[in-house]
Amino acid sequence: MDDARLLKKDLFGEIWLRGSGEDREILRDTRPARWWTRWLARALMRREAAGLLALDGIDGVPRILRYDTEQLGRSYVAGEPMHFARPSSPAYFRDAMRLLRRMHRAGVVHNDLAKEPNLLVRDDGSAAFIDFQLAAYSRGRGRLFRIAAREDIRHLLKHKRTYCPDELTSRELSILARPSGISRVWMGLFKPAYVFITRRIFGWSDREGAGDRGQQP
Image (cartoon, rainbow, N blue to C red; front, side):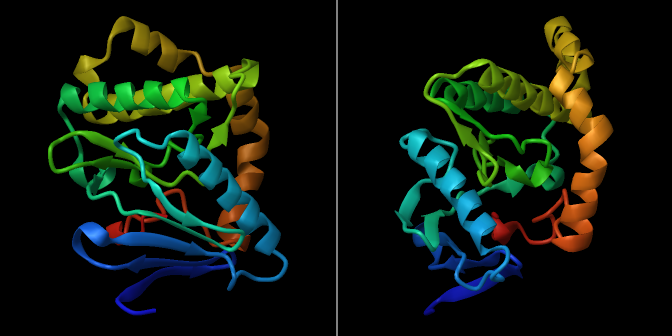
């Protein structure tokens, strides 16, 4: 690949940063994935593509540039990850909440906003979200969608509690104090197994991308 830099290589394939300046592209390539994880890599890529296609035209999320059964190219979103930028302005969190509600109205839940590297602070102070591998798109926005959307909101409010605690409203504090039943079951029963599988077997980390902003996985 000309003018390309390998950002990440794991069981699910490779991630490349291609181009420069305004023409930068993040390319997810599942062809190098291990034979026994290739089906999962492509399933996750389909989820990412479905979510981003539903969000086409919304500022603050990547755009799909090209997509087939093996590769997905999306636009690079310039910005600094939350854990580096440490946003303390309530305006940032208002903008992030507006973006999140636009996503939900479009039928997309992110499902991975607990990870700070997935939230960016752009040069103008506005919010952006990346890494839509675990996103879900639903036309009907049924009960499970609404539960997942509430968890998106709760994770964003947890970040606000970390960086801008004095600006939390009483309603936001109430949401933080009441995780969904599914969330409680997940934390108590399934998350330990998830952490073991993803970290010990797949080599993932909850702060993936923290060391290299350019990854934008």
